[in-house]
Image (tube, rainbow over all chains, first blue to last red; front, side, top):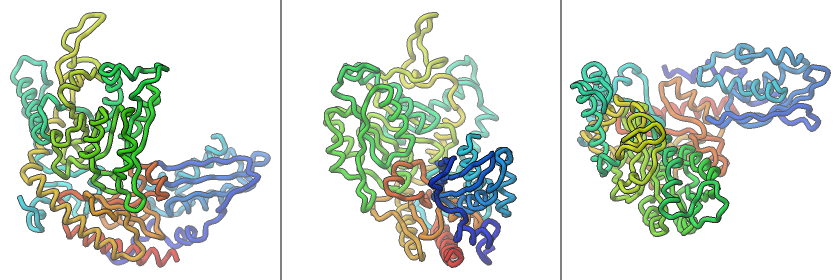
Length: 125
Length: 423
């Protein structure tokens, strides 16, 4: 039971992305922007997007939160670059879990989904 | 019963949750408490042997159910030092405070003729005083009242060095303009015990109505409404071994008599005509509809359980646990403990320098340790202190020194292994 820290949720690739996030920052010329927070635990994420011809050209995130929500933000902003808006609209829980590639406890699902919800809000979905 | 390592072991056996979850170290008692089998069996027995609606049936079962329900009010009243007719059953603390926020403006305007709903006329008493430490349940109902009745809310500030309530500020904020003072007895984020007796005394001198949110104090320490001399006091049953769905609003008899009902319907009436009705006596005029009869009876049993141990024994055991935990936590590398005051009840808040609180809670959960992480329904407070939430542990009397040793051992491990990974 007490051999090491349980690694399911905190695998190397998750820790690495938390230490060196992708697409962290703001976009001065963003066309779409939204902030969402999880009022229970305090995660807050802002998503900045540049949309052109029905596609996301650039995506950045900023904010503060737990390891899962930060890593999830890195992965999502990476994934949606050059993606059709209609495809993003269809994304759901399973897509986020596929991106994270870890088992997540039910209590933490909302951390994983926060960036997707924020992105959809920015896009008006 | 004096509490020590040996008696705690025996007491834990009363709580089936620990039998069914062998690894569980439950440290989220400020959110809700676990239930002893005595309370669970009381509910079961009531449904199996004595169940019927109360105050209605002319038959033995209904009479028995009514008797059990009324007995529970006597138990609650005895526990807090009031009369049974001063005990109103609600769903929880939140509902108790909402009831007041809706009904109070009527008696303030009646007795003083000063606050009139939606009136533009300037009134002398139109301020509500709260503290910066309030749980959302003792903040949002007053925000809404202020909005409805064009009132102003003032906040007694906390001292930044130890988060204690600034008593001098209380003396400044409570004035002749203050209509209502509503304060928490124990802060749910930092466990601070507030000097409410002194604040109530001062508020009385300004003729304000005084309300105490006792959700975090009632389960853990002797609270006597006569001694506090508050006008109203609210608490929840589920945080003190009772079932969910039962809360209490205490009010001084003379005020309850004047206070109009909040909910209307069956059970709360005296006489009904097609176009008008009159209300039942207190406390029944505040209990419209079939109440949570079984939970009320369960709360009575929960209080009897607490009394069998002794609330003073509970308080002193939890003090020992808190002092021990505070020292042990401070030994952990990379930790910041927010409780610096000595005047605390069994609630401790901390953070790791490098690991977000939510992740700490998840990691502890892998080891069977249940704690709370986040804002604890204190968003304005956390924003003021610029804290992105905290990890919070909160004790009840069934916790042991062993629980704390295990928690500290795992926290040390997390600190060491995860912090290293994050570097």
